[in-house]
Image 1 (tube, rainbow, N blue to C red):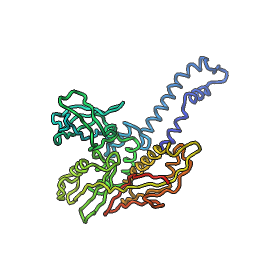
Image 2: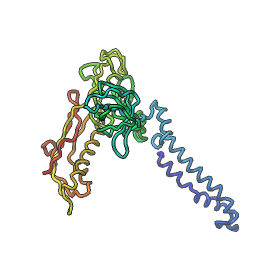
Image 3: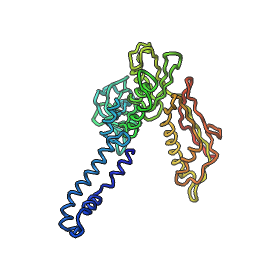
Image 4: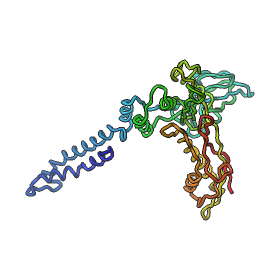
Length: 378
């Protein structure tokens, strides 16, 4: 019996079940109708028994990894030496100038700015990097701080400040790990042996570093002891130089195989970004009656971007031998577009000019990652 079956089994023990069972033990010569003395005497106890059964169901479901939630799942994770990955705050770069366009140098740690919009994100200055260039941190946990590039508004008054702009999300933030993702990590511990610098050890540890969203590991990259770790950011985009440096520092800061970072003695680890594989899409769209192609182009573009984001979500998947493989299937792309209201049919789909599926190169020599390029209509 699996946990779901246990839950369904206990669901039958409702108030109606208990009251009917209790009344069945009462002789038929006694009035058992609702409102009778015996009915009213049994009803409170049956109600409490029904509540107890529901509590028992929840307790039992929270005792299994497959069905536990929230804090109970956290406790099960700790039994396996795991902890839920917490939300982080995004680190961004801001450029500030005076009214004459010269670098503004008077900001100090703690100065606050906000984005523009109905639901602004707030940022605080951490430090000045160079004249007029500052590192700021989002005041909110989670990916809300990753979603803005543009003008910054000062919260307080700053003498001589002309303009401020958020120019780059240096280290993207992540949301708190979901129950489903944590559950998958727990269950994976039954399938793999994570120990002492093996591939799974590198994958699990690198994935926990702030800003890392996906990981591929290539052992014996350039001979014995060399390891190449290729990463994407939390937003599943290319990692910034700052993120690459941060991960390199944590895992192997010196690169001399002396084990000063997380990497074991004898390992030389290189942290890198994948090679961008730009996919230009050409296709023909038949629209439904009364719908013009121009009216749904924005929806098509948005769907294609989301489709490629979904592809990158599985970029780090591997087989039992930790081999990576990813194909851009035209059929899946067409299925995505057919869900758009107003699209009647999709045909003549070409990826980079070829009417065939596109296989990414993922080996020691080259690690590609797919990004949407241009979209043209035939």
